[in-house]
Amino acid sequence: MDKKVTLKTLQSMKGNQNVVMITAYDALFASLFDDHVDVILIGDSLNMSFAGKPDTLSATMDQMIYHTQAVGMGAKKSFLLVDMPFGSYMDKKQALKNAVRVYQETSADAVKIEGGKEKADIVRHLTDNAIAVFGHIGLKPQNARSEGGYSVKGKNEEEKQSIIADALALQEAGAVAIIIEGVKSDVATEITATLTIPTIGIGAGNGVDGQVLVWSDLLGLFEAFVPKFVKTYIKGGNLVRDAVKQYASEVKNGIFPNENFRY
Ligand code: KIV
Image (spheres, rainbow, N blue to C red):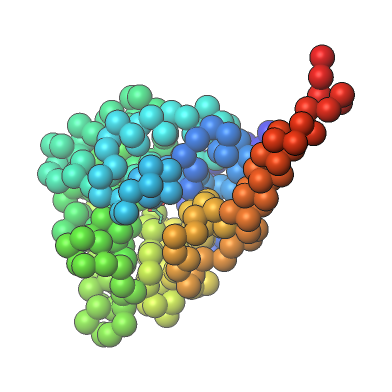
């Protein structure tokens, strides 16, 4: 087994090697991904992909802890990053209480918080209390309802300057890395060149320090909508449907189990 990926590993990769991140919500898939990625994100996207909800907003702390424990059983070497769900870090006290829960009840290495300068004091409070924090700027899925949907950021000078200020405020507050989601690639590239901490992009082009994709998007299993930035490496939905269809047909027709599958 390769050595455990730590914060030091990730920091040393900046400028040298791209960071590979994928989401996972359970032990089985985490164990399949573990050899090939640096970071596994237990994202609150599980509320959509796993729980079937329309957005991430109703994910709870209990859910995040449960899924992080499961991923921790399957992943032996990847760095484990867990999303703080919507409503779990509304002020410093609440954020610390919930982040401490993450460290005490799971094997997560860091927590992730959506937000920029407006969350800098919360990030500082967590890092001052020995919690490693990833920021998440640009398109923030937890803002989907308050902003009336999802939209790419950094399309004009004002937005660009605002995102750059977010990134700098988070770095200053002690964030150890930043996810940049749904941001014009030239803006993400500029942020990456400005910061000393790693940037991980999703829909932010190629000029960042690493990439993250949601596992069920990458495997073509989440079919409700496929954003432009998602590359589906296999048509997982079709593969699963075909396999189950064949199984059902073989059972109905008495073909399975034949003598090869009997005691
Ligand atoms: O919840 C999630 O999966 C995420 C990624 C989209 C970065 O935050």
